[in-house]
Length: 208
Ligand SMILES: O=P(O)(O)OC[C@H]1O[C@H](OP(=O)(O)OP(=O)(O)O)[C@H](O)[C@@H]1O
Ligand SMILES: O=c1cc[nH]c(=O)[nH]1
Ligand SMILES: [Mg+2]
Image 1 (cartoon, rainbow, N blue to C red):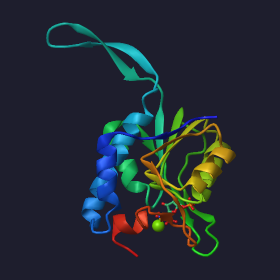
Image 2: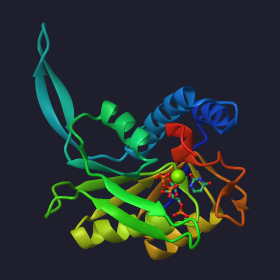
Image 3: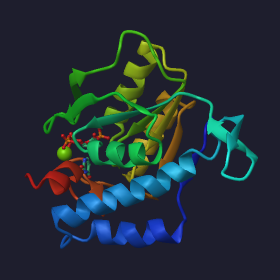
Image 4: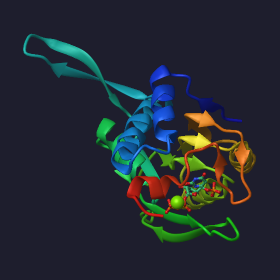
């Protein structure tokens, strides 16, 4: 069973409070999503394998390292887009494969509307990014799709989860490590995380 990592980093906690604030407007909200995603990505990539290499400095050869595995980020549209752009800034060699899933407002079940994965997996580590892990239906569906595709090592990177979503994802896919900024109290009757931050897609894109 993989771990659930909930960040305790002061910068993450500081920025998370700003992100939750209902007065934070979309421009600032997108900036905070980007910054928190980068901090969590740093934590989620602590175990990336390295290959040694030699570089020539202006003075002498120096021992260095390069990330050895091919890493891919899979944003769940729409809300995962800002997180994907943020992590690619840190590791520009990453491939980005988009998955479109939305949650039906009545049934709360995920509906797949876009899948841009290539025929064969071309990455060693797949990192799914989506700010909200609510019922967990979307995350489980995304992992199902990646596993059917042939992905071996999968991580989930989110901002805020409900206990229900963490439980569902861990039960369905115990081999997926989960990285979060917070696990909140519960889901309300409409499937929203409480206290959460509202609708992450709407708050990033000014819709809703
Ligand atoms: O854990 P779940 O209950 O499946 O809910 C989480 C999903 O809901 C949100 O997406 P939404 O359906 O609002 O789509 P959007 O990103 O296009 O706004 C969120 O970004 C997750 O993808
Ligand atoms: O609280 C929630 C739950 C699902 N999706 C969101 O954007 N927010
Ligand atoms: Mg939404």
